[in-house]
Length: 60
Image (cartoon, rainbow, N blue to C red; front, side, top):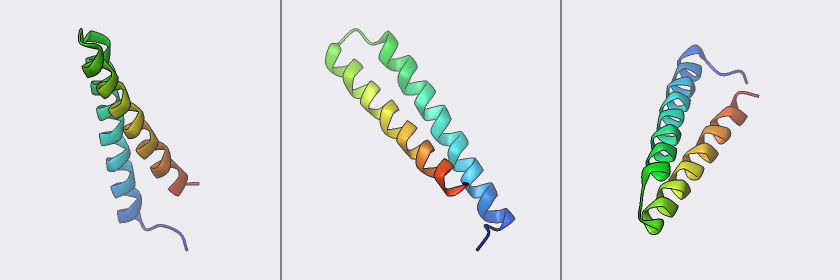
C-alpha cells in the first residue's frame, strides 16, 4: 500500500531531523578534546545516521 502524503511528509521531516543530528554530533566529535566524549559523540552520530537510513528504506 502506498504511503499517504501526510506519511511522506512525516518521514521527510524525521529524515531532516536525523540529518541535523548527524551533523551536530559529527561536529561535536571533531571538536571534542576528551577521547571518551569524542567517542560518544561519534557513536551518537552513527546511530542517527542508521535512523536516517532506516527511514530512507521506507521510501524505497
